[in-house]
Length: 199
Image (cartoon, rainbow, N blue to C red):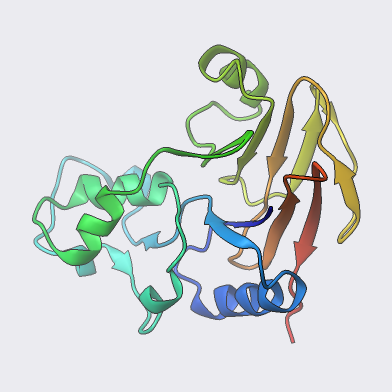
């Protein structure tokens, strides 16, 4: 099966439209999976002091029409965590965010956002918490990268890279600002780092 993995959209409707259009052209049969941070929380982490807001709209960047683009399964990221922390009442968008899982399994891989581990400590965290998983897709840092058995593997756009070895960690990059995503072929066991043009 083909999977198109994308994340760190941060409410950027224009960038998301460009990536979805490229997926439609390059891999129309691919199953799209989100890696979290679908929306942008407008309250920064440093401005948290236990406050809550009466509606989600007060703490979210929410361009018209973006919800209709977010039709694919996704996990939650730190932006979703913060939006939920700042609001309490039930409303459709909050209920949607609250129902997002922390991980998704696309056999034999696992998708997780990446804010769960300290900076540059993915290998150690995954070895402790997901020791049986040999292929992990994540986002969070907004930097496309690939490590195999702890060694950084150079990436070039649109080239097939095998995901073999005891542990492969793929950062799919960011939709916002970069328009990056990853195409994963679970049968051939390879990935292609992709980047939609800016027009």
